Length: 230
Image (cartoon, rainbow, N blue to C red; front, side, top):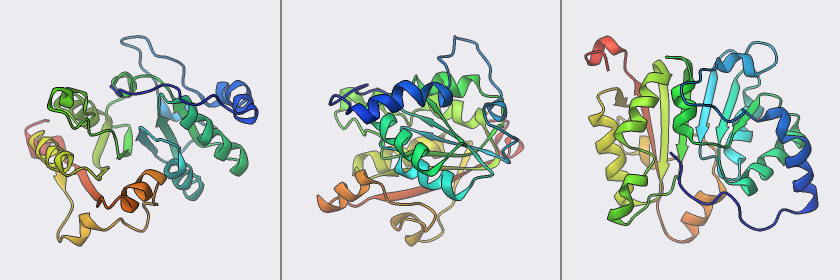
């Protein structure tokens, strides 16, 4: 589940218009418990693969990826309507018809997806919930990793970024303990340096200005036979 605000400052007229007029055509409706969806049917044509970003913030990373991979279908999960409005502006400006938006619990969406239907997932700078009593709210958790493992195809990639040192250790511990993923880093530069196909977000830029150092983890979904069926 994604915890946090669903709204912030009042939207300007132009962005309110986008929410009212553009969002209904690209939004995935709220899913009932036990519902199932085929993500390929959400897009015009037949996308080669489906990529998913959980907690897309202002949407600049998602829009960047969608513009450069028009043959892919992209699903973005984000409850914060101000961030959704920013992404809608990019969708309109760049004519991005390969993005769909889900504004409810990401776990519900993951549970509704067919097994092995996603080729890449991004979880970038999610709230680290630094207080110990809030750790249960962290998105990287055993329950969500099990849902991710189910939805990701063998060999698919999970990308996770954070600028919080405590969350860095938490991510490594929980992802590797799940038994479903292998870490792709072979040298420090593989996780200390942002890859060229991984654009900076405004949150990352704020972290750098504040003196915090971001890390960029890449994990590969292992074939079930290689990890006892996980």
